[in-house]
Length: 240
Image (cartoon, rainbow, N blue to C red; front, side, top):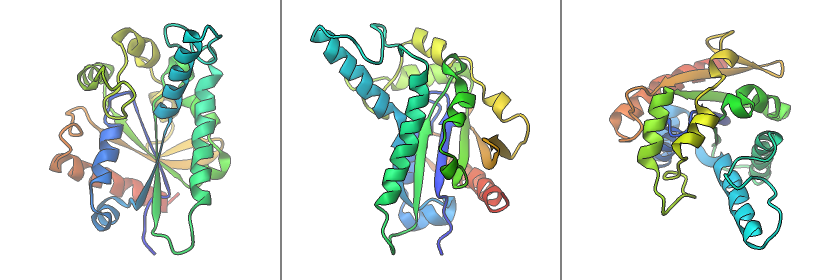
C-alpha cells in the first residue's frame, strides 16, 4: 500500500508560500511525489475561491441595488461567523471529494489551504469548526514567515488584472494588516512541538521555516526542505 498523507492542511499567513508549495507538488511526477513527500494524487480544497465568490456576488447585488449578503462596501465580512462557515464548507468539499473515490483508484492526498488571523477568530476558532470525523485523517504543515515577509510577498504577487487568481491575488496593505498581522498560531501550537490538540484529538504538525523564501523560485531548495519537513511529519503521523 502506498504511504501517503490522507488530508494535509497547509496553514500560514497570506502569501507565505502555501499556493507555491501546492504548485510545486502538482508539477512533481506522481511516483517522485509519493516517494519524496508522501503525497499522492492531488485533490485541492482552498477557501479563497469560496470567499472570492462572495465578493463578486456582493458587487453584483450592489450594482443591482440590492442588499449585500456577505461583505460591506470595503470588502470586510458582515459577520465573524462567515469565517467559520468557510471552514465548514472546506470540510463539506473534502467529504464530497471522498464520495467520488472508487475502489482501485490511486492513493490520494487532499490538500487543504487557508489562513486565519486573530481579528476574525484565528486558528482557534477555525479548528473548532473542523469536522471531528476528518481530524483523525489530518496532518498539518504550517509555513512560517513574519508579518513583514507576508506583506512583502503579498505586494509582490498581486496582479490587479487577475484578483481572483490563486497565485496572483493580494490584499491592500491596510486590509492585510487588519486581518492578518496578529495570528494565534504560537498559542495554539505552544503546548506540544509535534501535535496539536484539536477538539480533544491529537493532530500531527510540522513547521516549514520560509524566512529565506525558498518557495517563490520553486526550485531544488524548496524540494529539499519540503522533503525534510514532510518526512518528519510522516513519522509523527505514524506515531499519533
